[in-house]
Each structure stands twice: as structure tokens, then as C-alpha cells.
Length: 201
Image (cartoon, rainbow, N blue to C red; front, top):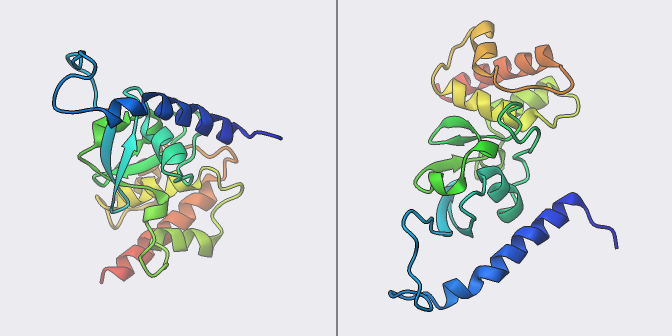
């Protein structure tokens, strides 16, 4: 049987959840087996608001939002590129602000509204205007970086709905394209800004 990297990581995370599940089963108002929580400890079973849905998930205190989204909630549109806050492939919105999810600890955004690339489309399946523009303009090559660019652009357009090409380029400058097809990406995102303006008028 062959194992992929993703299945291996899922197995490791699932193993950690099983090993600690007894703590949740027997947790009451008092200490567990005579032990109290250490000062400053982090609650592992947390509630997240992801794409408008409430999700309960078991997270480690050092677990990043990218790991939680991909390997526990199955939202694989959030890509892991550099895993060190340099490429932007993992960009999501937290309270409408673009964030590198590889560098955000999950437990720190429990009170926030998290939106991933999967959450942009409407309930009827219609794509978000920026997503539709990328499709129409064919603004990609390998497309690995594209979810991050789209999320960064959507976040930026919430603060500036009528940007110049230079302003939008600056607004998404925290994202990198491994194919270096920036001109095509920027053209599609400018079209997305145009579509978005039309949809709100």
C-alpha cells in the first residue's frame, strides 16, 4: 500500500487526537485524575467560524490555522507553500483581513470569521466575481498560488474597490507566483475588481 504525504500527516494528527480523547470523555467541573490545568494552558477543543459554519475541532496549542483547515476540516484549497509566511499560498481572510494561515495559531482566531477559497462562492454555486474573472481571463499557469492571490485580492478590494493596477499590485505584493506569471494574474484580478463593482451596483 502506498502512502501520500497528506495521508501520513492526517494519520499523525488523528493519532494525537485519539491519544488525548480520554481527557475529553472524562472531563468534568473538577480536575481530571487529580490534576488541574496549568496556568496559561490552551483549551484544545475549540469552536471556529469557518465559511459561515460553526466547526468544533481538536487543536494542539502550537497548531497553525493552515494545518487545521487542510488536515482536520478538509479545506485543501488553502495551500501550503513555504510554510513560513513568505509565499502567501495559504492566505485566508480573518474578519475580512488577509492572513497567512501558516503563521496563525488556530486557537488565536476562535472569535474570528474565517473565510477560505471554498467559502467565496455563493450558496447557489455561483463563483465570487474575483474567482469568475480568473476563470474568464485564464489568469494562471499551474494555479498552485492562485487561491492565495484570490483571497489577498478579495481582502484588498474590501478596502479599495476601485484600485489602479499599481495599487492592486501593491495590495497583493505579499503573494508569490512560482511560475512568475504576475502580469496575467494582475490582469485577471483587475477584471475581478470590475466584476465586483458591477455586482454591487
